[in-house]
Length: 331
Ligand code: ASP
Image 1 (cartoon, protein in one colour):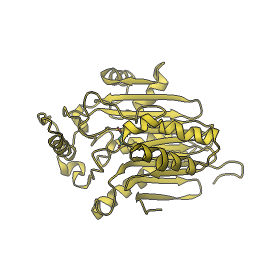
Image 2 (tube, helix red, strand yellow):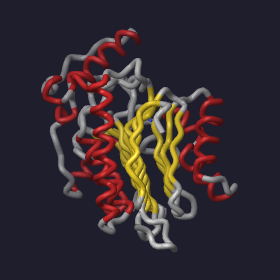
Image 3 (cartoon, protein in one colour):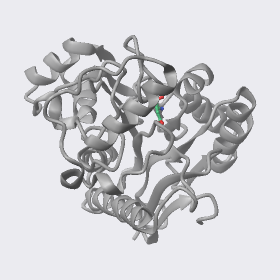
Image 4 (tube, protein in one colour):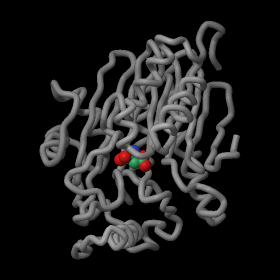
């Protein structure tokens, strides 16, 4: 439990926002997603409970989400129009404002760790494409064949998306893992997108945020969304809060959503919930974008906000119970 002078640790995670409603999910899918979010939040919480840093908790939680084919990040990510998987991730340390990001990875098993390695092993903030995978390899991060990320379920989503766009369907790549082996029957396509993220406050009062994604189904031309853009999909500052976003990346980039929320907290004195609602329900909705955010502040406030039907989410804090949500009307 927290002492009187400290708010204690706290953690919020998300698994994407979109067409997440009772009409779109079978009960067994709903149960699988809720269970996955609970497991992830507990994993992050156990790092914080043991005195670990917010950065370590964020990375540990996102590792699980990247390995879980239910989510569009790491294994089970969506395909590009060319039939590849291109993964984006970023992480930021609110204590130092150190930030790392990667875009377009295809062989690094845990993109969030590659993003963190950019902080610790380079003089840069963002690396892209083959160079980013080569850097991750040079840092000793686990490399996999690109087919590690391929799943039959996401391939079918690509075929449908390309047919709608009237684009050619590329040859089916070798190594796509069969439905049954990757829990494909449980995967819910929340609108051709999805992303995972986590924000944490550690017991020393520092916040961190991380985000990881496969981006959007059938993306072309090396498209990069908000998830690896510091200030758009991810931001963290001990002077304000830590934020991770999911949604239509092009809108989140234009609004600088994650930084905007932190700025409202730091400079306009808004509560965390008021800040996330103003940006998501106000600015993002007015611009025509959809999605959601999670946030945590150094004083222990936790918040989420989304303008989609639902968002997979979980929060837990020192002395407070785990809360898992999927639909709009969940607490
Ligand atoms: N924000 C991600 C992107 O635009 C997708 C998502 O979160 O659904 O790449």
